[in-house]
Amino acid sequence: MHFSLIMTPGEHVFDEKYYVQDALNILEGKGSAMPEHPPLGRLIIAGGIGIFGDNPFGWRIFPVLFGAAGLVLMYMICRQLNLPEKLSLLAVFLLATENLSFVQSSIAMLDVVSVTFILAGFLVYLKGRHALSGALVGLAMLAKFTGIFGLAVIGLHWLITSRKRWLKFGLSMAMAPVVYLAGLPLLLYIIWGKLLNPITETITMLTINFNSTYSFYEQANMSRPWEWVFGYNIVTYWPEPHYMAVISSSVWALILPAMVYMLYKARKCSRAAVFSLAWFGGTYLLWIPISLITDRTSYIFYFYPAIGTCCLAIAVFLWDITQRGASSGTGWIRALSPWAVPAYVLLHLACFVWLSPVAYPWKLGASLLFYIGVRILFKQSNEEHAPQSCEVIDS
Image (tube, rainbow, N blue to C red; front, side, top):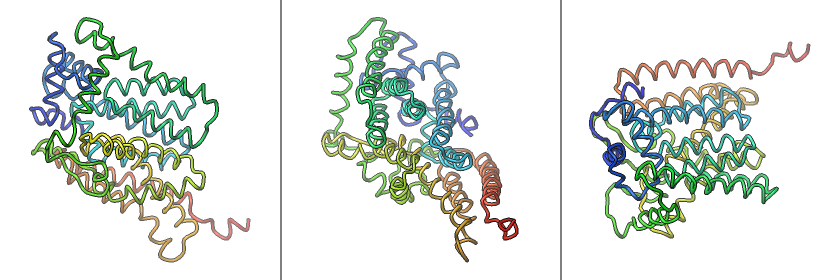
């Protein structure tokens, strides 16, 4: 579906006009006109243009590939959290067909690069390779400063679950600033042809970012972090096909209920629930004090790094409804529980068909195949977990 869309429109979508133009400046040896962002994301976009030309395919190919890689990493994270294979597939399916996630990984912006490195950091952290996870967060920071939120997630999870070997863990997490400060002058050298002080450049970037406040700017598409979950925000990137920065309604409506359920699961010592809550806290809740203290401008697409944990929490919630209804439910609960996942998936796909910029022949056909696949998958799952007959129990 990404490739069916990659050449449309033939003009720059939303902030592509800044990042693509800056990538062209880099390729032409003119340096950069965007001192407010670290350079890795723009260099990756420049790489696509350098290989495939100054056209929509060249602009967007690497963001698409990073988005696809993020889905693979999401599956591996779910499995590392000891979630069943089918539940993991459901979580990835929800993420793949969530509108904001799909749109952000369709266009030449920095967010998808940063988020993919964050997901890679989560995976290796869960595998116990803490130093490498810190290094990957450092790469996420080199793509966009919000990559540092990955460090907040890992640190919060470690404080909740471990709190052992403080020095070793601290040194591992120090790999994030080490990689960032070591990589920044190298990447800037590619852009400017000279070595620049990474501390000075970082201070400049942070100063520009923190000067972007609500009291200084007035834009209709800005929104406060609490409005992302308590209101329904839409930023139109492009009118037709309609690229819109908006969370799929099917996900948005269940964000808070799913996180409340994760709190319940965390009290039952669910590893996935604890990590999901840390992920939500580090990538979303942290924005609330930042907004209140700094008055920093924010937009709905800043919620993109938290979409993965929302899809994970919703998948766990639906899975538990299905399994508990099949194993211990009675009457109408047992009759309806097998339909919890198919009904929700149908609603989720309807939102994707309505919101996503993909042409209708593609998304209608794909959605039908997706729905059939999920229905078969969970029908098999229900059969596997169905109560045994009296004869089997007696034998």
